[in-house]
Image 1 (cartoon, rainbow, N blue to C red):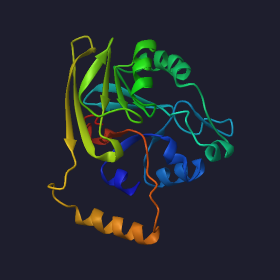
Image 2: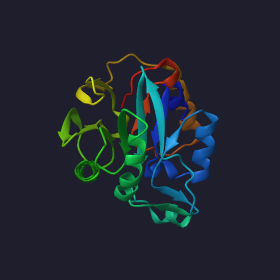
Image 3: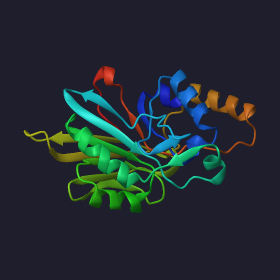
Image 4: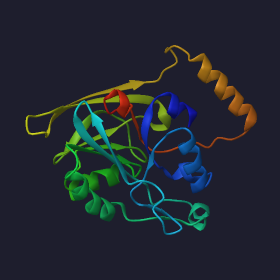
Length: 227
C-alpha cells in the first residue's frame, strides 16, 4: 500500500486477495495512506463500506471511476461477513446515475476477461473497462460496442498509460494505449528494494499479494487517468 501511495494512485479496485487481512484492516490501512479503495458490489455485514465510485476532474473533463469485485471469494472471507452482489445488476443501477454527472465512465474490474466482455455487451454507458483477473494480456485495447477493454500483465508486471481522445460532443473519439513491461533492464529503485527487503524480513514466507486494477494520477495535478 505504501508503494501505491508513493506512485500516486488515487483509486483502487478491491480485489478478492485484498480482503485476506480482513475488510476493516483494508479500510484502515488505505485510509492511513490517503488511498481510495472502490467496490460497487461488495458488502460487509450487510453494509456498503466501500465507495462505489469517485469522480475526478481531469483537465476539465469529468471522469467517473467505479469498480466491481469478483464474487469468487474463499469461504474464510465469506464467513467474515463479506458478501459480493451481482456485478451486472449493480452496474445497471449505477451507470445511468453516474452518466448524468460525468463525461467519461471508467470501470475497474476484477472479474476476468470473459466477464468483462459480457459486461460490455449487457451494460450500456461504460466507456472504458480496465480489467484484471483471469484472462490474457492485451497490449492493445479492443472494442465491444462503444466500450473499450484494456488489460495489463498479471501480478503487476506492466504499467499502462491510456490517453483518451474526446470529440466535440464529449464522446470518446479514440484511445492511445501504452503498455510498458517492467523488465530487469529498467533502473532499480533503491528505496523500493530496501523496503521490500524489510518486509520480507518482517513477514518471512508470506507470498500473498493484491489483485485488482488501479487508477494512477492525482486529481490535484489534473493528471491523466492511467491503468
